Length: 321
Picture 1 (cartoon, rainbow, N blue to C red):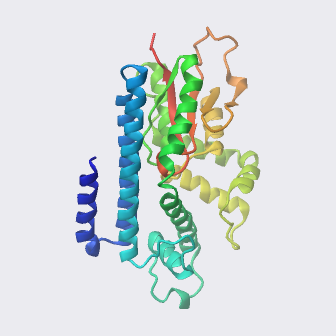
Picture 2: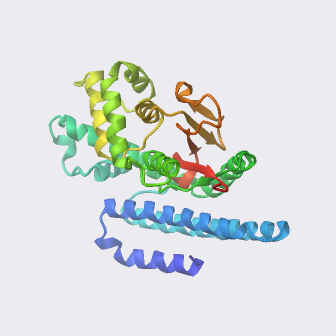
Picture 3: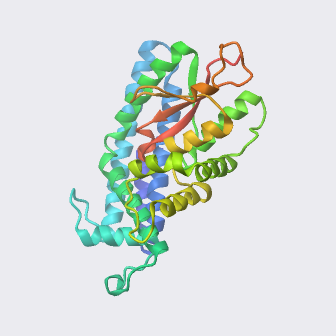
């Protein structure tokens, strides 16, 4: 992606934005950010060739190019959002944020203040939209920093994995990353297609959490930042959460990974360049490393992946022997 191509893309977006809805614009913004980060990955891989001096020079060139493209992309996004009336300031006006939240939720903003108490389903949509709006704002605020933060995190992770003979296998950042990463691990260990697809793994995690509500509910209530509806009990809200795990692209975290660990009866190791490594399911770990009858699932956790928040990748051997 050349700088001129970014400018041309911004110009084309300016011509079409009058016909583009707010949802479509925000969706396109996310896609463009992800495309830029994918380009960074490709350029960095290409730069990791040649002598150390050549690699250093190429790395600097990649950083400069990505930084320039990131700044240009941020400017284009800010201009487009401004055309819809959203201010590009650190403290946005309350009405602008509320309208953006309602727009993402798919709820009409006309006469919303005069309507009667929203139904539970609408309230849930608004709350999830609020999280999405906060994420959009975080993307805008961090675009100048995500490249350097991500590269630092990845370099630290690479330094940790390389002596172990391991490498990161990139997983698609589409909200299903945890389940796709586990699917990738299962495929690698069976030397064939995984016995479970990422969608089946979602259902498996949701089913296990429902069957063991008493084990998961306390952690759900302590970690879940969305306030529980006043007319919903904690168990009802947890049931709704499990339904979202099963039927949506909601990001999976420690709760879902714990459910998969017990369902699959797998020892799990998560490496990170930002946090201490985590080991789960020691009761399922083979007694000795030579026993490969029940191999461990090895993942990597990324705090600064793609500027869209947390992300999981699969970790595989550098040389498949």
